[in-house]
Length: 217
Image (cartoon, rainbow, N blue to C red; front, side, top):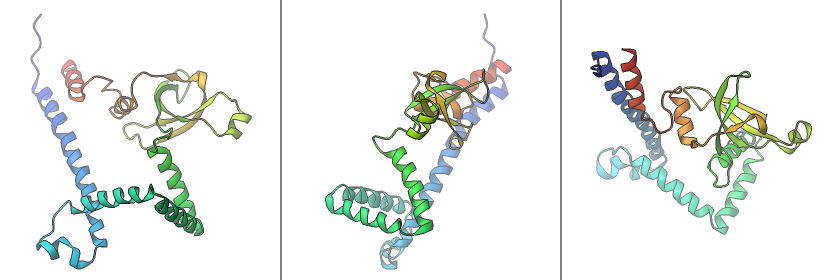
């Protein structure tokens, strides 16, 4: 059986699949580097790269940001640094508006980045938004004891991301019996959600889209 030759449209789509992710990646990285370079504004004028080297060097802000984060983590792990952080947090807790914002952001960051956090611990299948309609979600932990006591002790907390932007979604508390655990990793599940079901586990993004385009043609 002869295999059909790819059409011009298939070639064009394949080229887009190569250049669009690369262009978006470069654009996002340039935004991040640009924001990090603004950290150089905290330095005195005599320490600026233009004063020292006679020219502005892109990327120095990234180096400064990484060094500041690393040194902060290094200091926070010893006794003196941990004490200073506790004093700083108690000070922030006394400021009404700042207290609310800081506490909320800190709780989320502690959950997401701490080694013992429970965020996105397991990819699961849930029926949403109605019975019989399935979507991928991520187990984030268990509800608080008050909710477990009033509803059921066999509940889990899940996050249902939206497509193609998984940073927005819905927080649901569901019976454990209504949730099906998946063997795919969290990264594979996120890729599957972002690609709107085109790129499954073990399937390269370009190959999946190119094959689908060729079948249509």
